[in-house]
Image (cartoon, rainbow, N blue to C red; front, side):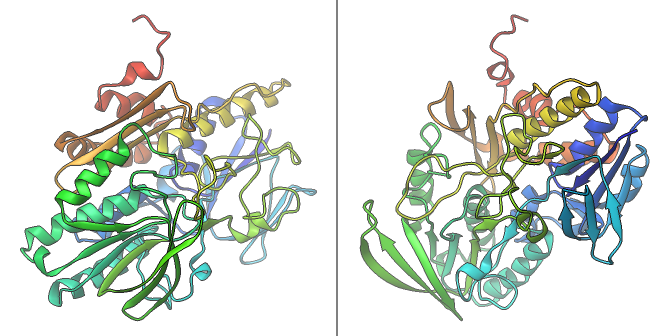
Length: 429
């Protein structure tokens, strides 16, 4: 019997546990370890931040649902990983041994890289976790009571831009519903070289569509923006040109701000010699396996992916839901092969599919593969995206509670937007 430990219980970790249980059967032990005892559907956080969702609608307790599938669960942080002895040390000093480790921790949020930023001791909000989104909502209520300038965007080194666009547009819609949008100037400040870059060098006509959306909603923007520090009610931003030269220094006032931070690898993972790159992201081969530690696999935001190309201000590459799902499925099939005495042969498809809600409309994109040049390069918009994301949120949470191991993004999202044939053009049915 092998012991498979999944470190992290988010959009990658929970499906990894369910798929492993389904594929490997009851002959092997599976344990999930997570810092908190609940699952959170992070894509709903822009709605939480304006009061359109409550905490209880987007989280649920993990333990009963995993145990129902015969999966053990430990709600504690891991402080140390020792690959040489296949051992994890928990926050209380307890040890957990593993035969195979799947790292799906997600990122460490590096607010410290921009002084004065972040929801804990800083002056900007975040929607990267449910706790941050709730704090952002409290600050949003203050804005409603006392309207003024707003800044939304992404810090230097950020790699997850979609939620910043979502929050900008959702906030715009929420303020219009309260009929106070005219009292709230909004500026989008981003490390991206152009609006709609998304860390992917654009998808389809994302630049034109997003610029048009911002113009029609009276949202101003600053790109190639290197935010240097934040003070109470003021953000300092260096605007660069495409050669990296300083164009202008901005001192932007704000009453409310939500800025996505740069990511790093979590401390326990980043500390393992030879496992990660300098930012602490796990280095994996084409089979999602560590080149140095052959019994360690990794998927999701915590893995290392090189940027699409140089930019004046650092921009990382996002890891979207379908891409993470394909990594997880490849890992499970590779474990199945290893346990059968074979060499791993499966690879994640690394395709990007995303639904971004804009309050009462939305934008969707499909990038196959995610990194250009692409076979499919499509970006669309409409009210249908808003409705599709609501439907997908409910579907995903329901499936996680049921412990369904089917590939959710492929079987549901692409059908939802009517593009499932793009994933398998070889099929004739």
